[in-house]
Length: 334
Image 1 (tube, rainbow, N blue to C red):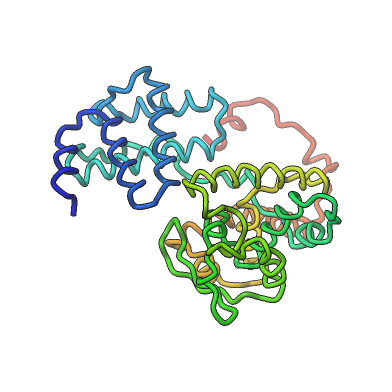
Image 2 (image 1 turned 30 degrees about the vertical axis):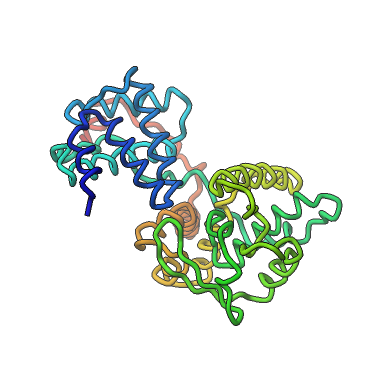
């Protein structure tokens, strides 16, 4: 339940920006810095498009959102980035509606993209991960650490980097890791396999005076979230370097390990429900977005195999011959 001071602030709000500012403060107080940052980026983008920060929920229309979507594409945003901005804005609108600051607008986001573009591949194969594991990085400790964190993420059922960062030694008991996902707050239990244990022990010497399991953030320094953000940027930069060393077409990122684990599990016939539970997803719908590109590729290969059974000769005259331009042909399927 909202306390009196927060309710008073809500009652005074007239613009989307005012409402989002209040949401951001609430999120920070509850430790949800990632979502707070996403909301902040979302409202800054919207205000850049509008040209001011006085837009109200009443002025938010499907037509305006469609123009905003076009603006984002013209700014060079990819489809999944556009989707993120739209989903954040939709979440803001939903919360404003629940709190009585906006009237419900059915279909407000129906004409803009809020899905996941599976053409942006975010998974690699166990073969590539094996090559990464065998890479000689003795003279590049920073790259070796990035490589090891990527492997550990994969070995621990695709644990996200943010959760890897905040793991505490107390989360591990009798070879079992128990932690709460920062995003969904779900409690996950993961058996630490020997391959993961080797990596954890490798870095024990760097965490002797720290409550954290891994040497990613320094407990003696302030602002743990800023340390995490800085570590994430360096991590992705080094993963990109590793991608180059391996000559990969797909750039490794912090989330590739997670998507790769899900895809590998799916290829082994593990049910989506089990994969969803393993990843700590809020629903199987989220898991299916992880597997979409794999599904599309599998279905295309299946179709090609079925067509190949017909042994069609593409050089046959009946295929090559162009139809005459007459009304009966042109209107056949109209």
